[in-house]
Image (cartoon, helix red, strand yellow):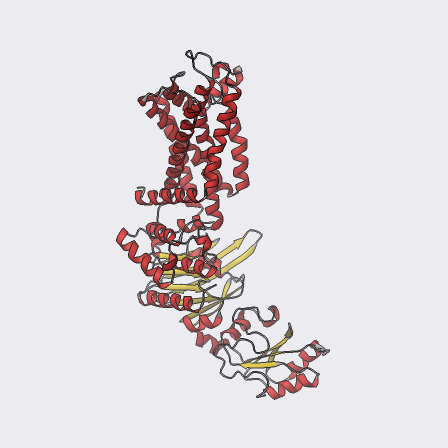
Length: 344
Length: 255
């Protein structure tokens, strides 16, 4: 691993017109070969940070040096940037788009053909080479969007929500390629909304909120340092007084946060918190009988809600990766999770 | 140093997109043909001053309509760029290591070549409608140089406006508000000698008059061509506008 960081951001500040502060003194270093997942709520400044690092936006203050400070065409050759929205020309075919970007990256004819074939194969778009982008599905466009980011021989990948709209196979292909590039020494920064994906795929997580970094480290270390047990239950409509019930729950030892929203209750504990029967007893005493509930071990989502955006500020767990109420989607690594009340 | 392969690819991309959107091409032909049809027959008894015997208004008009095709077509060069800006495709291309100048020149080359071809087709239709030509190869080559320089410079200006405003509406206003005065204060439709004095003065300085005079002299042996040295300032103006366009294009990399 090189001593010079692949990415170095010092005191990055950026505001949008109207005084909206997107970045507020961001300090970040990423080493070659590192895969860094950038997580945070909407408006945290993730996209702005990536855009500034990609030289697609000028920082209001601070300094962003990539690969030791390369500039100009050399910087653009060695840094691949994937914008959040698939910026594609709907009037070109998939093959024409790949061919154009091979040339834009200065690949020689033979090399261009090989690279086009490689990325088209990895992302499964070789069969639609002659199809107009306008006639491709959203997933196919995202695959082409990704393929273009991997056309050059970049040493730094700045990827803004790269797996958005991708199916499981597409995600596997993408992460396979990312891992291969990282093994070859490339630094990867990917903004992700899927916290499970971030925890499972990235060796390092940076949590952003309010234009700054709130936490930085390996996923398991972040969870150990900032995670919390959580408990949530889907509640049927009842005449219970939510404010009163919240007070009663907060009186239980270890309950740090209790939020009622959208027919659910979210509890965040200090330590393991009260047992399920204790919690159910409080709810049932108030005439509230949960349709389902689950207890989750500390995970990245609890870190997210603890440091970046509390449950109280979300609409029933707006962060991606949040579970559906009533034991809908199975999720993640919550070993202690129990559902449905049968084992209460 | 411009990347010729990239210029060629961008050029091909522009043509391919034009072929896939034939409505634009059809309107590009329809408008000058309508002008040629209406004006040609409306003023067929209009006597052109200082013309040889048998020289009719249609003979005078057709070279003018060819140049008008360039005028209107090149003023619309920026509209395609706005589509690329709105989809973010232009910014994406600019974040590659390729030189923005090559991308800009590729687009210009595509537009200028297409417009010359369109002008040729318009001239051929004029011939079929009865216009008579007495083509002289030397002056025709000079006229082509004027046409290329004018189309390139005006297309660059259109792209500059597109890059600055990124608005199809503004481009529409530019096309309508600027083109019409340029058209009517030039010798496209009427010889300067037969214009009111104030209009003739404006037409004298209108660069479109120089282009149309060169083409008319080459095709119909009418009038006098502009001096050859005039190509030098025309080339300089074209080069400056193209350089400004390429520089502006590089600047939009950072929104």
